[in-house]
Image 1 (cartoon, one colour):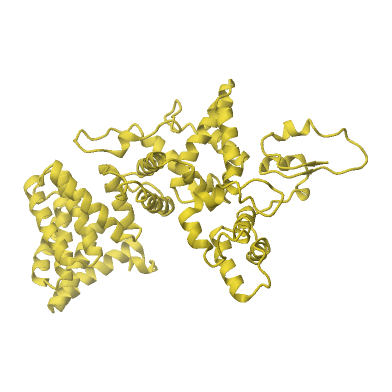
Image 2 (cartoon, helix red, strand yellow):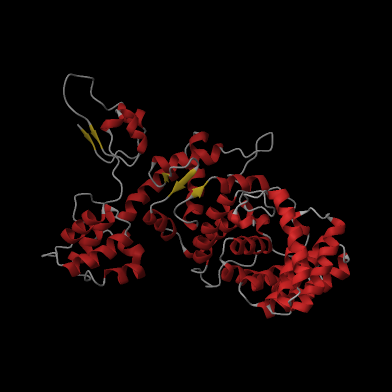
Length: 488
């Protein structure tokens, strides 16, 4: 007995169709629902994943009716199967399109990039196999089943389906891999944070909170999220990654999720994903570095998708998102991308808040930091002088932000070869940190090391030696003699 494409029923529902137990016979089930594995022993279950490249090439060339298989044909086929992420149905369908004479194997990819939605959803190109569905139709049927469940009288089932549909609006605007539930966890914990009273558009005020409910003790209640995930797994629209709480979408499912939307829907859902990413990122340093490495991948992909909208300029300015993402991108090494956001943030705050506003000064300091990292020391110097003057006026010379601004400008002076100006500032920084933080504080020791370096450039080797001895003694005490290279 064969149950082919048993995608909609649950294992328990399918089992009601099984014949009574007997002494012989076999039951074969094909399904995109991984839960069907529970109907048999693990050794009797086989997961069909993406094809090996050589097998995929052979399938494409066979479906394309291209004989004999030359090296040139195989090279062209290799590019196509890679772009189709080795999905058998998509490869079979591409072969049928080539075999129809509508294009050649060498021109297929150019046509695919321009007309992907048409080629993967057109009813005429269902492939050479007897599976009479095109690629996108297969997933669209699953989506329609989820829609039907969302209209169910069973509120639990309806809520799960609605959660799944909401996730299918967000996930296609993240990267297709590394979709971690931590994004939703952190966004939920920060969703009620007080937003600024300033006249600036904020991502935090636009957050869709349907999947971000908190329980009685103020922690994220992930029940709805989990039910939505379970339904997407049930229909094989996502798959589990090896790590707990991490999911992935096949690249073509990921593309289908966007292609099925209208332009307005894509822009709305891209913004929804952007806001979710922004609200998951904390201002402080309390989040794991590993999470930021994952998050920056999703942010960069989302920003690229946003440029494909009707205005080609990306998502409208959101002050908190621009500031957070600028910081994240710079810390993760994407400095040019950070610069674009930080220029926009400074220009907007200048225009709306005025040049003297503390938030404008903060944006100025952030852009100066980016300029320094890019080697644009002259541009950094101009901004840092303004920042230092403003913080001196507003906070006074002893304020930590003023001292930090002084240290930053000194660093830029050093990079510009203005060692005398750097020396003057670094002496002030060291004196202030000695008084406020104490001689053993890491910030004081760092200031000591910076001044010693400047003394070297000025040829003041005796003064440099005295400071370097103190720095070495302090680091030996605090870090030990076996400290790692980045601590030396």
